[in-house]
Image (cartoon, rainbow, N blue to C red; front, side, top):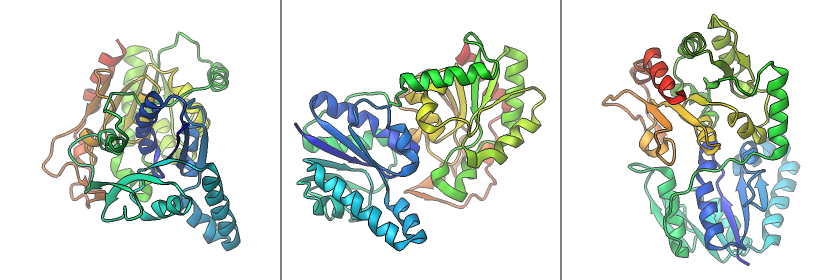
Length: 356
């Protein structure tokens, strides 16, 4: 039995973009044992994935926060993490971290085959180095496939995977029922936030909150839909803006659902309208239709995967777009004009076509 360790310490979208790789490994090595090293925030995406045997939910960023609070707690958790990885005696690691420190840990843990990206010479501890300058002209998943080449696994289209357990499905069914919703209701979700991994810069990716409110009212009045507003606890202020600006009543579930249960909630929707980022990828991975609005980020690289008529992207072509390049965000000198030029009517028309 081959034992694999997948390392992806980044955000929600990045972790979900790793799931086609996991499916490919399972197809090539049906009896394989697969573990995933991620951050604490994203572990809920993986808990219900039947292909994953173990999760190590503690990234370098998480450890820095723990060290800041207590040096001894940081040392304790670091040693526990390292010993846990070493004890598993993994055969192969696929390292998507772009950080040499993860490679060093896997070297010291005795993993013989260490495959990863050699970004800015950070792959110095890898045995198989795939050169990477940036994600530029093709989808992130296509770049991720490069790490399977040393294993002789050929490229194949797999959907993103965000599994829902029977327990989660029942929990969400009870939650929706408690909010007065019925199984035959036309539910459309809106996610006005997203992009938490960008920290204080997340707002650069957001279509204006007032337009989400205007869109929600149109959908209620023209299609009879029930609007479900989604977001995490930190996005309450943004959600309140949308709710208070709406003329009609919405169902506010922002912060009410744990990440591991969110796939079950998304599966109850007919459509999700969102900004680019994690919410979009959670919806595509849950098998529902999506309508996303892209501004600073390239839809070619970070858009819905795989491309489909069920996943529509709206954007405005501008010379300065995309301004997120080479893993860096340029200063926006046009006050998010690329997002502002996407009209409420254009989003509404696209949404109607998707729910017919």
